[in-house]
Every structure is written in C-alpha cells, then in structure tokens.
Image (cartoon, rainbow, N blue to C red):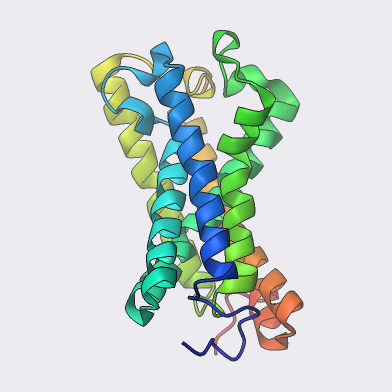
Length: 233
C-alpha cells in the first residue's frame, strides 16, 4: 500500500509500522497485567479499573494500536482509516492524562495516588507516560495529517471531559468513594472548573500535536492551523 504523500513512514506495513504497534501493545498489555497481578482496593466495586481516566486512556490506546497492527498485517486501508480516527481521540487524551498526572504529582502526588497505592517507577511510567509516547510516535511517523480543526477538537474534548465526570459521579453513587483523592476536596463548582480546564487542555493537546506534526513533516498550513485553531478556512 502506498503511503500518504505527507506521511513520514509507510503505514500500514509489515515492517516498522507493525513493530511500533506491537511494541506499544506489549507495553499497554503489561500495564493491564500489573492491575491483575497487584489488585488494589480502589479498583474494586462498580466501574472496576475503568473508574480511572488513566485506565480508560490505556484501554483506548490498546484498541487503537490493535487496529493499527491488524491494518499492518492485512494491509487494509479501511482498518488504517479506523486507526487514524481512533487516534484523534486517543492521542490527545493520552497527552492530557500524562500532563495532568505528572503536573499534579509535582505539586502533591497524594491528590491522584493515595499513599497506600504507590506503584513502582517503571509501572508508573507504563501507565502514565508510555501511551502518550507511543501514540505521539504513531501520529508523527505512521499517520496521515489530521484534518480536525479547533472547533472539532473542542467538541471532542468537552464531550470526553464531561462524559467522564458523569461516569465518575455514577461510580461514586454506587461505591461511596471517588477514584482520585482530589475529587474529595473539590466542591461541585470546583469540579466544573477542573473538567472545563481538562477539556481546554485536551483541545490544546490536539492542536499542539497537529503543530508538531506540521513542524516535523514540513507542513506550514498545519502549523498555522494549530496556532490559529478557531480561524475560518
């Protein structure tokens, strides 16, 4: 299959593209294995592991790369397009999760990880950095340019942010506790601000990824779109 003219590396393909997707899947599956081998109390109850935005992002990253690997093995243009659509959600979400997690940890790690739930550094990186790293690598080298613009990115980000808030509140109504300690110290309006900020940050992540794509691949229009995301065509 001939690659998109603005795409760095041939994908789907049974060589480098398949290797990247296989390595990413191995990392993501290792993180899921950690959850099975070292169960934590907060992961029990309604919602299971998927009460955590980190695990939702990890699962979406795994699905994205699984579809990408299937596209590589079958050289299917349809599966390749599905992978790229999934990437528009999964890559900015992974960058958002990494940014929020490491940023909050720099202030006070106990806001996102209770003291009795501390995990080893390597596993921490697997959960909170590898999805962003691998999905960004896939976007920059193995994907055609995104066509999503500012308003589209904002709609996707806002929808994800407030759907997750609704999911968190549903889990709280069933379990009586929140997955992240920070939710216990915020009132309703502060949560509105947190999730609004998260939506804005995820929109910014989308535009930043688009700008870097343009920078790496020499596409001035994409750099301009990212710097002026709300400008009309």
